[in-house]
Length: 267
Image 1 (cartoon, rainbow, N blue to C red):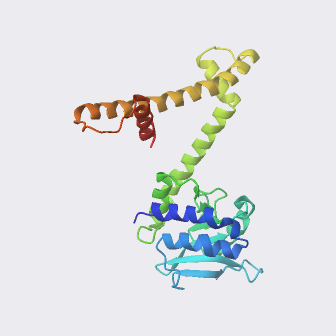
Image 2 (image 1 turned 45 degrees about the vertical axis):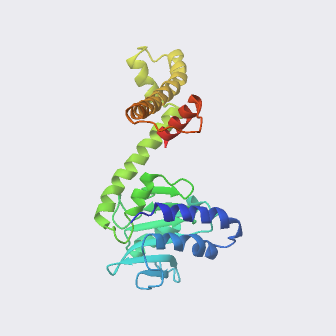
Image 3 (image 1 turned 120 degrees about the vertical axis):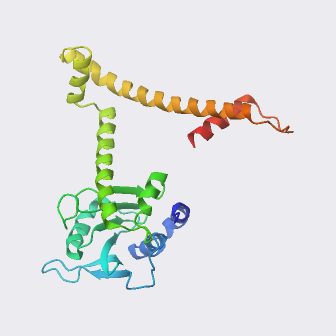
């Protein structure tokens, strides 16, 4: 099932209603439940979607996780929800407690706008400190849609998602390292490039290379983007030459066409 359209609609709904959502309960009703419904789970079947699922921790009684999703009579996902203005980083410990008690495989922490997906890659039945997948409704890429779709009722496969979670987490860590190195190159990276070029890691070279490395990396990225754009534009021009052009009463300038091709290539 294609869930991109429902997610886009939910994003629009969030933007329209968020200022009127004053409580955590309202956040759950307006945003989180529609998300669970988008994943194909019957909100009105208490055997599938269990609200206020008991998750007592040790001597601490009365603990409840907001929603538990049962698949094949097993608790497979739990949702811990916060008000949409809340910073999710302040609430991971609560989900961490519920995770081991419910013996689930996946825990989702959300404020209705941002979603953090956790599992137990490091230690079985102990939630990892870092999510393997995060996304915001305002920034739904096709790659995110593909990953979220794996949690749909019709696609859900615990083992496949777990294996894929390792790849996702590693990819996120590599991207974070790469971004940090672009923004502020580490001394290890600086010395590496110096050893490949200038030869000596003296202070003068270190200072110079800390300035040059971000410029060089950004230029490489920009060059690759431009190459892709030019390639797409060239293919578009070839296509225009091959296909007969029908006469039109609308006059379009070359600058307008060039702008159109660039936007089309980016999309």
